[in-house]
Amino acid sequence: MALNERSSLYWRDSLHRRLTEDGRNRAVLDAFEESLNQAPYAVYEVRRLYFAARIEDCSKHHGRSCRSPRW
Image (tube, rainbow, N blue to C red; front, side):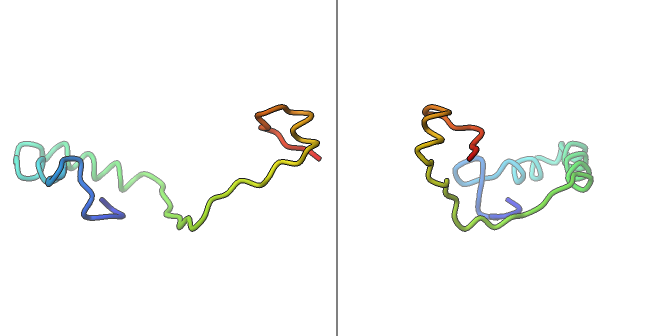
């Protein structure tokens, strides 16, 4: 919800809204907010993700799954 306010866990409702309106979950919401305030975070914009093509030598040495490409 921090990146998209319209996202929700339920069809037309969010878990946060349900917990807030309930009124009995203040301690849980406070603990959650405190953990968010202490957690390191970063936001990245990913525009395009692609994998480089494999060269023939890589396929020959590593087979179908090349997890450690080397020249």
